[in-house]
Length: 80
Image 1: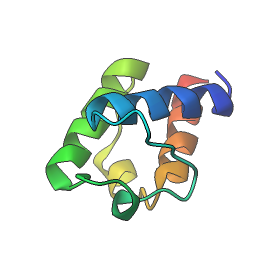
Image 2 (image 1 turned 135 degrees about the horizontal axis):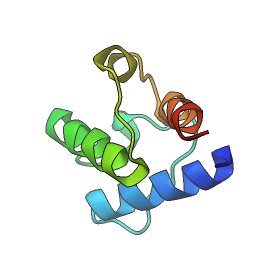
Image 3 (image 1 turned 90 degrees about the vertical axis):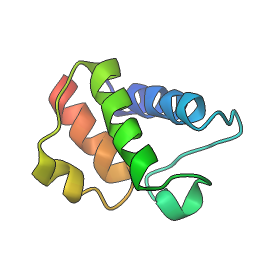
Image 4 (image 1 turned 120 degrees about the vertical axis):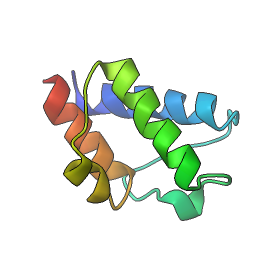
């Protein structure tokens, strides 16, 4: 799966989870950029991504996500 396809699917997950069709993510997007992205929603986001892509993140991976780009890079590696 290409990185672009992963990005598009992750964006759809964001829109569904935060119930906001106007969300546009990029590599530099962080929790500060998305209204309602708090620690609980972060867990829900990680869980939704894991289910959607049939992957599992290690705790060390999750704690090193500094932005959406880091997350997408990790997903792309896992689904390739």
